[in-house]
Length: 86
Image (cartoon, rainbow, N blue to C red):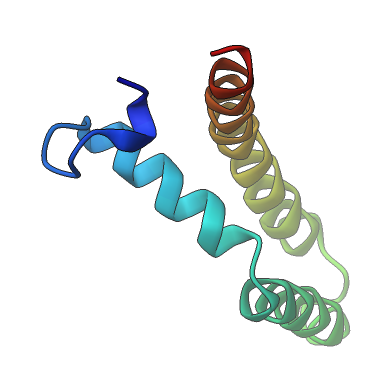
């Protein structure tokens, strides 16, 4: 029985979470939201005098999100590879 054919309550919490997050993060709404956040950050540059803290906000946020997404994407890739090999 492949993981995707198991009932939803039999799959692990992380499996369900990873699947939903992967679907959501690939949506147009999330992309538009991300662009909006970057634009808001850029617009506030003069307000914060382009300080180190202002730069640190976007750097820290993107680093954390990228780090976590690597594992979610890898899990999705592993799951897809497993299904293709069956």
